[in-house]
Image (cartoon, rainbow, N blue to C red):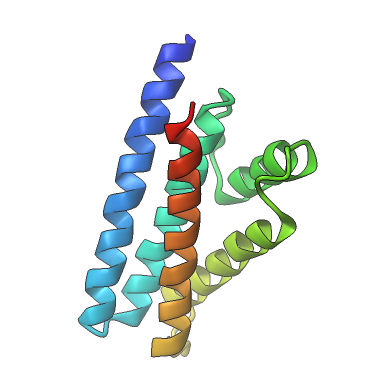
Length: 133
């Protein structure tokens, strides 16, 4: 597939990540914290996949996304992304897993707010980068 396809794919994924972020905020205000955690994580994941599309990289798992992000944008990157960014994504995935699969997990307001702020930070950072390409 050509460059144009991957750039369009990145754009579509980024727009979806913004929708997911808005959904997470809506759910937060409805005090549906577990669902807000889920949507915030997927906002991050979709924006990372948008970034990976700019490198013509396709993955099929969340772990694959995280590994490719780490390799291409942190290890081989130009310093735009840091190990702290990687940790934000890894933490968001842990919270999402607990929210979705741990029957006894209690999602707190403060933790969910942090999850949404992390998602907003990464979605905006990736959006700014993609707008320069």
